[in-house]
Amino acid sequence: MTDVSALPATTTMSAEELAVWRVLLRAQVRISRHLHQDLLAEHDLALGSYDVLQHLGEQPDGRLRMNDLADRVLLSRSGLTRLVDRLQRDGLVRRESCASDARGLFAVLTLQGRERLREATATYHRGIREHLLGRLDAAEKNQFTVLLHKLSEDDQPVALSA
Image (cartoon, rainbow, N blue to C red; front, side):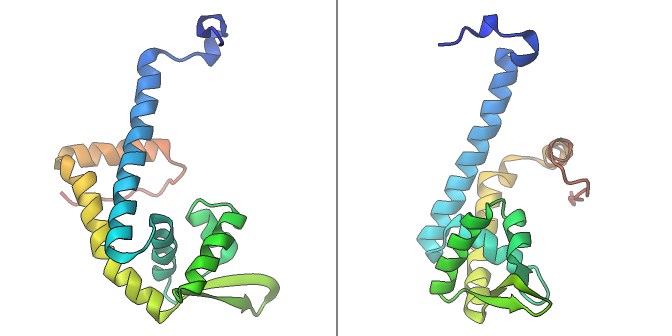
């Protein structure tokens, strides 16, 4: 076992700093687990699958290149390939070749996928309100947004209405 006090000061964290990190991780995991369980129970749809359908559904033509989709859902290329395989077997997504790039593939939301997404979105939104937003007042939501933007690579601010 490593004695933390023997590490250089630049590699150590205070107990308070480590506690902040752990609370962040626990909150993210707890909220994700609740959303996952709700989506599975009510729609037989895992949270990762919902995320893929949601990103596709946000596109005007319901399609994204597989590489772009992997970046958006924070999965490796191989992880996304396996997930899209399952979604394709379930009839929720199909793959299409890219006309301008023979090596490129698109994931495309099917009508059945769009319907499943529509049904599951109410459950997803309810879960976010129940497990996150409903626990914060308007000022806390605004402060939370500011703090998260400080931590994210996304420089695009999101406006919350009070």
